[in-house]
Image (cartoon, rainbow, N blue to C red; front, side, top):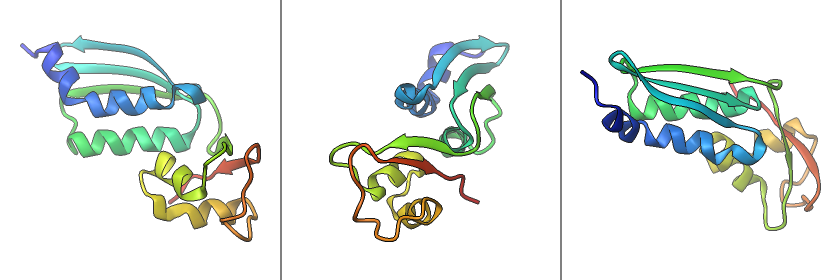
Length: 130
């Protein structure tokens, strides 16, 4: 018989990733045992965030044979984001892609000529990357 606490501990990075996007509308709806698998049910605001959760799952266990997941995306592909004081595109890239070096794709998708010239309150869309 599978151990719920063991599976929750194993997939803690995935749970933390979902919870880390709560301010953007992500919710963790269920974490329970379903037979021999951890049943993880969540709602995320965009495909960008869904991809970040998927990356977390693959980092924990590429086969995820002990995980049953239902990740529902409520929005579109891109993730809307409002620049905050102290933000830069590298920080936004790290948050949504797990890699700060993809800032240029965010800049390009938003028509930002100089990635160093963003302002607090500026609205951008974080694109889905291939």
